[in-house]
Image (cartoon, rainbow, N blue to C red):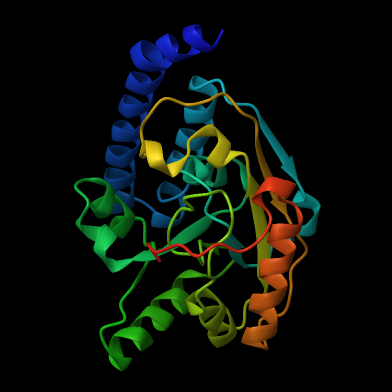
Length: 248
């Protein structure tokens, strides 16, 4: 079965995923230019996320959606286990959201332009004015139930264990007055460890997305500590504990 799954990925799975991803970026760009970025900046990616995991025959389990009020905006913070995290979040978190991402990602051909047109939040730390603009952009975008998703580690893990959380997402949540929702991603590292790159041979494994109850963003340190412990609590024992990530 392992051999057949590898053959399927090489000749069917990954080629189909590449086509779906390219078409999605084109649809997002055109839709966001001529229509609503609120709609076109999310739903095509949601479909892409669902299709990608189905094409690659990856089972998914979602827990905790009852903790979310569909009329409220949140800042979702998740551990970054592997290359499939983005597809899992897009396809299954069940909320219209924007990403908080590094400014450098804007330079990625097609994808960066699509993200810009979809009004994702690019973080510019070049100075106080740039940081203020980031907050202002987020404040105007995250309304009416539109949420934000952030990987506070800033980079995928090399071991499956969690690295250091940076406070950017928590500071932003405090600044614009949004509650924080910790999210545990489990199985992504086992499916596609970082050492194999973004696109590689998957080792079949179930993915889990656990949405935890919201916490206050009033005290940044408390929110960071609480989020970290909550996210880690639902990871398997061999992925428990902190491990330094030099790529952060």
